[in-house]
Image 1 (spheres, helix red, strand yellow):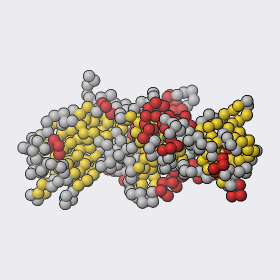
Image 2: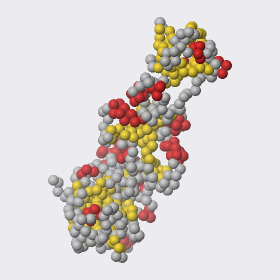
Image 3: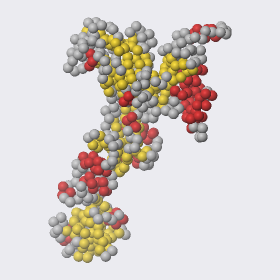
Image 4: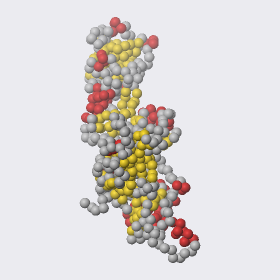
Length: 592
């Protein structure tokens, strides 16, 4: 879900068909109303006032204090429910909602059940959670040398960029699959001349830079001709302001003397390639190779840089095939926030989301509704990421607030959370509840899924003698399996028409723990049928068999029923009708 939202009070409907009896009696002054009132199939959506009221009940305050009597952490988390209009894993609805239900519906009797819908504050999506523990670092001189397998190149090029995965494998040898690295490196589109790479790639410096940070690598160095000790052997002092260094012989690339041929004079600006050394404590340049010079009258203060080098940020992830540039098909784009954004904002880490928002608005002015963009960046605590989604024409930062439901029941005259029941929907006579219908391909039809009071949720591609190629989904609300042990899904279904060969391909049950809100961009897992589908010869309802969902323990999931006759290579001579009733996702009745 995106930033917190709340359903208007006009939509907050309590499905109690006979509540009028109680209130009529109450208003008429009946002092002894009949209290044996059992209701099932109730639905209630918490309002903002409900979240506030939850924190005021004495029973809830006692529960919160009992969690941590020393520093009252539980009480702090309870109060946060009213501020955030949401629950958390530690301040959970199973603990605090019963008091609210007891207050609102005190006369309902044992056996009454109610599905309560509420907001959970769970954090960010699984895609963003992948960035927890991500390593962010900039390539060092030694790192460039490793990638180049040469010395002196402090940037990457198109030819060397493919060497990054092997470098990361060695650099992060203990990383586990899924690990993410946010890399900063210098990059140049132009490849160096092959001659330069015979032994090394010179890195261009002024003389003052070399003397300030000397090393034993060969560099392209710029300065001025000072005192000439020998024009025959090309020995002279190279100067740059207050800095000077002795050049021990200047030749061309083949070792030939160049002084007289080039007409070098004192005061000329000169560029050469050489290696820093010291002899008797005096700085020297050894193996000096002439590059160019400019007469003193027109000599520039510094030689221009030969190449344009930019700072680049990139995301890599360790996959089964090794380190690869990060990608996720559920996203419109995965972006490593450019270094220029940090520079423009005058920061080294991003703490203000408005900085990222402005970048997205400027970079993607034509982003479409519902498109999701992941932005990785360096935060104050290291590498991290956020997701942004287009809602209409607005960029919205996802915050990890999701809508869930939990079943509550009156037992022994007390409201309690039925934590072993995660989702139930009879459908027949009760409507689709919080299930939603999504259409991908209609092929001229008005709908695929619909609710029929006598049969439940039904889907068909047959209309007026024509079997259509369609795709439609019936999607559950979020189902919370945070404390599940062996969650099992069952339902009753009837299938009429179609054929026994293709019906299992056309009619499928899907699950995901990362629903994007769009069935076409969500990564689904197709569940294996646990019992044979009805053969299509009659309207008799049969059990689906038991789907074991234990692999989703600790997660929040969505279940979906996919009706899809639009499959390449499969004709549709007879489209089936699919009817679903009595869905239950719960722990088994008896522990195994």
